[in-house]
Length: 318
Length: 318
Image (cartoon, each protein chain N blue to C red):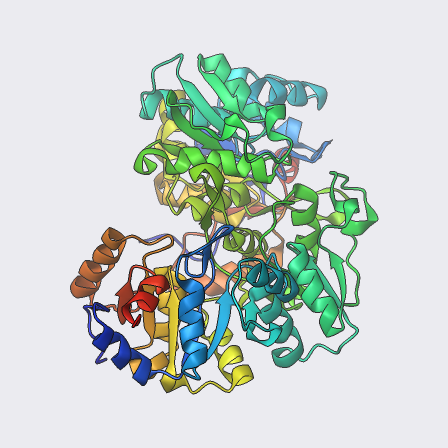
């Protein structure tokens, strides 16, 4: 392993130019990188424009499974980021649908059981599947005599992601599918994220907590179609025809974004850039560097870091 | 480790008499051992009477945290089991309260945050604590602006157990306490049970799934006051003044009851009896024996087994 333990701080126009020369493609996490909640991160639009001007490839890869690509497209437009088309967007509700179709080869038209928000339902339906579960009002109230707890034998996969409509009926009905037929129905989890930063400074439960809940309860593993799963990365690199050696992952979370770029061996082993505009602060980065120097495990240490992608845009200003 | 890998099937009156001579005290799991749901297991009352007639000590230790000792007392009476007093009952809602008072030394009168059913609330209140959370109707509906998400600085412990009133507000509010002040508020989990057998042949999520959900989301460990935690056993042995070497654990679940008897070194290393009247069938036992012979790990292999405690009572009939 030749990866350097100390990440490079991109401090000058020259360093940035060097980085831009090394990579043809840029994968962006969204929340904490492009925006924070509903607010655009200053300079983010300018940096994306810079990539367009330099004929770079890019895509947006978010572990969020609640919103479909169509919803994200509206958000990019609303925040005034130009040049964004649907084919650049990879929320995990979409990667889950890609997994169902392309990896699991589930025939179009099949039924898929969903525990999660509408984004999953939308992407599966757009791809040609029928969805069950999700926000079905039959699941709003506890009724253990309800026929919705009977397994529909035509269900060919279960997709689990973030939802605030989490209740005992949704969990129990999903569990029936995960246990059915010796646990043979494929189980896809949209991410392993424990929490996300909510309003009023609250730290709130994220999608991975729901996925992990179901995995623990059913006592089985799941296919992770979110970061840091290298499967997720493989799907996108193939779909976008991005050269692995020439691709950089940019994100604000060490154990998903940075680990994914490192584990996926992007950029010839130097393919991860941490921005400090989201959930990770400089002291968190330092802790991970210290840990890596002690343990020799460098999977969470980014290749580069910078305050935000707006700072990158600023470095290049004439 | 001298524990025999092959458990002894109690097949004759002589074998049973030998077992009864070896042990002074008997710890019973309840569901699957004494009753199944609302139905008494045939012969269970007779076996308990046999223990009474022979001046044996006994207690009931259940991982269920939903029902208080008072509720259990009514259930024993309703099922016609004589000689049961409150001091013989150890549901984990009670062991959680004992942990708070005797191990954590939380001053009486303090506030305790609860995610779980009323049993936890009842036992804590009976012991002299004030409870928050639990089934507070403010937590019934999603409202991330609600002041109930603000941490009450007087809360001194968090207790989590089984609940069907599981929703995003209850999870989110509990998470605030688990993360508060560098995760320093003690976190007690009532058990690690994944599922339990529900009505209509359904397998339903159990308390451990809620505990594990919170542990994963908050990214921290918990104090397990249920089986197979030896802490749970220690509390009861001390409280009842039972001699560890002379105590037998009787249960229907390998990874809680049997493991607890074995890990706790009850009966001088031969202190666990499996009954097949609950969730574990003979083929499950065989699988565990085969696994133990391969791996050398015997913690799930019982010392003895029998169809039910009713069968034990029958062996001794004149």
